[in-house]
Length: 344
Ligand code: MRU
Image (cartoon, rainbow, N blue to C red; front, side, top):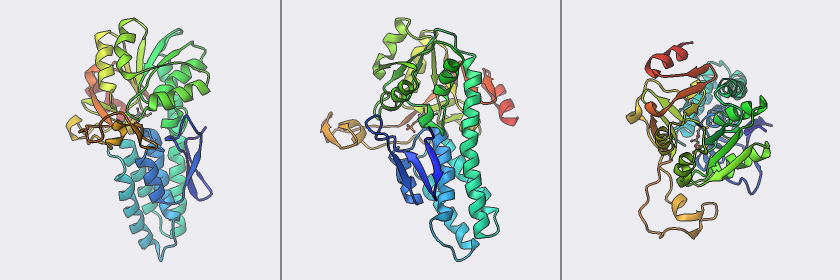
């Protein structure tokens, strides 16, 4: 199952807003359509956004005819800005856009720019699957037969091009024959855990139990969790940015001495920055006041209530037992060990 791919001059992706009700592949024929898909989370998850950013630049190369290559390059730069304005927190999106834009700008005529951009976007997608398998291989060593792993949000096939990061670790361990059970947190307000993680794992025959986010305490207190593995949208020098609620899970895990792992590719690292320099996306109040954001019916809060709806939070690195990457597992002290891996 590929979450996002290039087909017949367009970007195709699984519309994740419809799952688990409906499995539908949508087609984005131009950058506006792709930007809209990113904003409304039809495609989401940091590594999938990296691929989307890359494919977005490729798409911009084909969306119209150009007078000459200079005009085309100006067009690509404007499209890169539009794509970069969709969501601010996952650094992978910017990496994907910039990588393909740089390649495209090195072309000397319209046809060459098109070829270079599309090849580079396809390379990002291919690399994503390869590195997720490596993350899975390294991370699986941390899991023992019989473990129950608590996870948050969706970090699986749907959050990447395929396989997944945190869910990829679980998938790899299961593939090795380990019996792993998963506890999936629902992940309010958009329910990536209940809608997407449960759907994906059940489809693959992996044992999953759904809990509401406010049940993390009781499952840890009752000894029902051996390990926590989550993904990341950006890893800076002092914190891991991930779906809102991750920070709370990390603190409760620490209180119960449960290892808390973060699985992410190196393109999620933004080691030059610190926590206070990252913009946390704030989303529409409708996500909190309506029971069903898809049709904006059935209020579950007074319509005029004031709402604070950040999409991500920052978990200080002191709560993180280890970072699982495609280059191996990184343990503290991170200020020493992360730069060594990033330099490789
Ligand atoms: O708002 P989303 O659904 O894009 O948020 C996704 C997450 O927070 C994931 O945990 C993260 O991107 C890692 S996905 C491998």
